[in-house]
Length: 119
Image 1 (cartoon, rainbow, N blue to C red):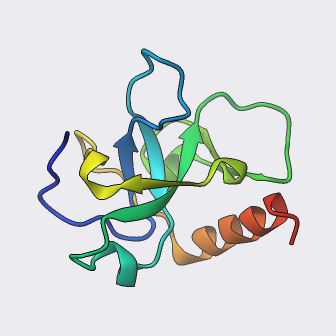
Image 2: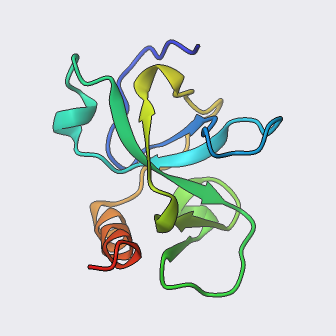
Image 3: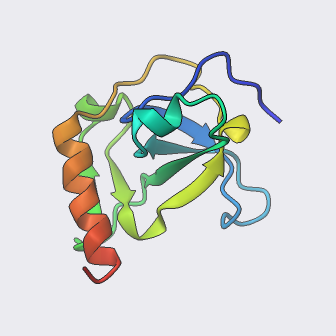
């Protein structure tokens, strides 16, 4: 279990092994989408995340495409339909500094989450 030296902030990219990932798959990048009120609260053990993938497929209404300049990673996609709750203790900080997604981009993602939920 990873022990993180700091709390995650909204828009940051961290790494986590998601329970829905196939066995043997390592930690993947995720964007923290929960509010900092939750993220920074010492008694809140979990955060909301949306996974990133570099397997860019056809355009989907639940995907938010991100350029390398927005993340510090290669071209990637946030998959709003795969939003998850993960324990903070399972988060791993990236080995090198990644960019933080803007509030505008997180709000765009929230609209895609709403669409994925049928709202």
